[in-house]
Image 1: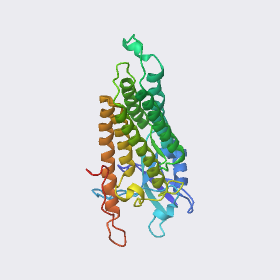
Image 2 (image 1 turned 90 degrees about the horizontal axis):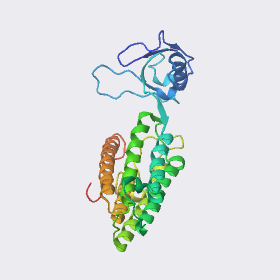
Image 3 (image 1 turned 90 degrees about the vertical axis):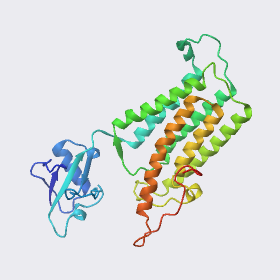
Image 4 (image 1 turned 120 degrees about the vertical axis):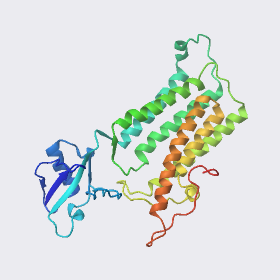
Length: 309
């Protein structure tokens, strides 16, 4: 089989094309492109050509499939469009580093005399709520790291390397920002009842969040395949993105217990980001499961923040 590899502009990426066996897979083609261009398979995005001006999304070639699956009839030729995705890292690597920062930075403000470097010379009194906040915070990010390695199944193997710097900047900066004010010597604790309500509600949401991730895990096979399915069970029966719901509400619990402007700013920013993700996923599921041609109809549900959205 002769495979022509072109860019989106139509320029030939591999001069003269690539000759492969008729039984070759997309993975074999990626390895052949790697040998000719030095672009690792993780950087390669291969699609079928689309007509100029077409609004259809191009078909992405699955690395497990045979190249014959993408040819017309008995054709011995195939044209694929190559896009260089740039340097990539695995999603587990990405999530590990973005969560490791807050897990390590927050205790620094609790255990070490960092406030001396900000001009505070007096004796620091640690309130119980600050200690509980440390436990809560570390439990949350330790849970996230463990979920990354033992629970989450990823539909995409890699993410652009640039996302590591962007995500780490987000999590590490907010982690330090919140830790600075929650552990500050001039911090004024909330009442005992408010603290218990906040942390109690937050822990309940953290446990619920873990269960939501287990439900999502079971929608995919261990290799990350499985396509889109309608999430069912527990909070997913009433909310499309129950995992985001519990994530947001667990930070609400943390902020009820600690009451800092920094914490609430983080809550607002995180809610905005996850709400955008939730609306996109909700629209996608409603489009996929439209009740036509034998497909099930997506049920009526809240999107992310019952009883508001």
